[in-house]
Image 1 (cartoon, helix red, strand yellow):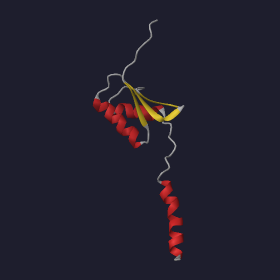
Image 2 (cartoon, rainbow, N blue to C red; image 1 turned 90 degrees about the vertical axis):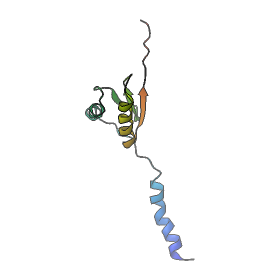
Image 3 (cartoon, one colour; image 1 turned 45 degrees about the vertical axis):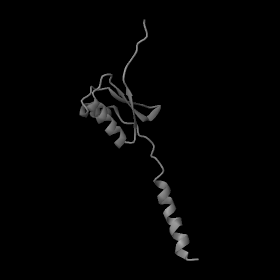
Image 4 (cartoon, rainbow, N blue to C red; image 1 turned 135 degrees about the vertical axis):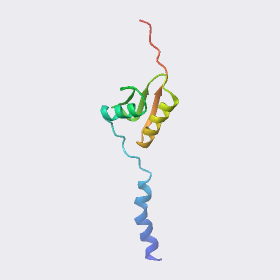
Length: 94
């Protein structure tokens, strides 16, 4: 058996498998998220991330325009995050 037929797959296997690994999500600072909000035409505090689930990016802006939602979705995708858009808020009667 050819020696290269054994060595080459052994050397390539780690590189092939490394493409399947997803990096851990990063928790972005309030300043970074405020920058995203401003760039997408939203108010400060409408784009947020929770410590318990850093893979999610929340857009808490009922009535956001499609352009604003698309802007935040594009940013979240580029940074490996899943966008959760909160469309409406029901308040319990007091």
